[in-house]
Length: 137
Image (cartoon, rainbow, N blue to C red; front, side, top):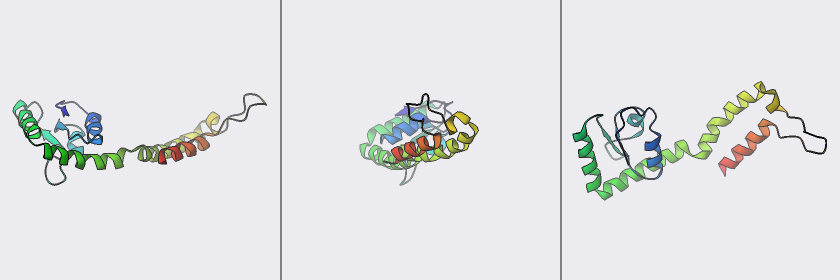
């Protein structure tokens, strides 16, 4: 996966590629600089200078010429992305925010039944506990 963009603030495309085991080639701008390890035994992809076609061409040729190196970098990149951005981990980061917001929202804290024959709507806390359990399974 090649992302030579110069103004890519977060680099979601690089994270998605790494989650699929594909080592990215990206510029040394934005978050890519902090997500992609370009050298050494833990390398996860290749970084190139922005607006430098020769550097980009060199990285492409290097990546295309060595399938074993692409596989190694892809394997190296997948594990940290899975642990940092899994659904379980994402839920763990969101749940405290929802718990902080719930007391400020009177409707979410306890919603009355719409009519006497219907059961009450679940509270936001109950929904969050269910959602958190769902993401952990």
